[in-house]
Image (cartoon, rainbow, N blue to C red):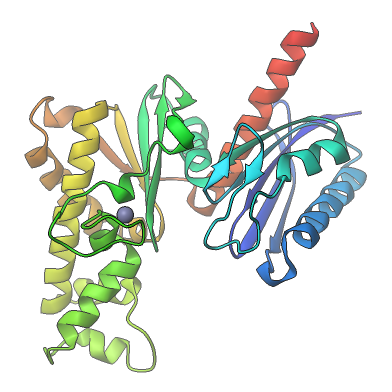
Length: 323
Ligand SMILES: [Zn+2]
């Protein structure tokens, strides 16, 4: 019977499940809507049943499981605490539910750390020992990989670069601090800053793009491509502060690469060209040409890839102890 590991990425809107042989060959993938309104027990029961089906279809035997989901988590006790996009998951014993059902090693990790590990092993960060992964989408998060391993820190809270402060007299953040990187450069706040500009009645293409709905970061990127003045100024400011945030990360950790993912990274050259020019201005302790600032390669797959890496590592550990 073939042995497989499972990687599971539980998000606020979607769940991805992948089965992989120990040689890395992926033999089954399923994607489900999360359906948060159904509550955690019903959702996890659906995931457990789906894995049963996938195992039955492939005739495989499960040997370990990696799970990633939004923070905050209690990784050591295998609990989901209370992520803002997974309501009612307070102290949810996700690891125990999977262990009870399958009787194999189960590892839990937050989604940004798993994505960092996925990019490190399979994506843009492969070949480097130390990388920092930054995800810029509705919020800003990240993960730190040191010598190929996730650096967790106290409370598994390392890597929260979205809440490093870059403008102490700026906007109050959801976290309680003022002027977090996220309050300027996340998709949510790029849109907020743009709305505030447009409220003064400045002419802008964004008014036409947003005619029948809300201003989004994607619209602003589109307007930047069309050289709209308001959009270009908002974007320049975004790149400036993101460069400060990334520069600080580089000064602190001197990673070989900074990998940037999330929706905003899909702006491509519009983001990476200014960042590669600006970041060195905020880094004095190491030569600019050593800083690799690159787009993530795995897109929405990064979490599930990282979960698979965790599952594989958990299995090799139990195998070692058994032998
Ligand atoms: Zn914050």
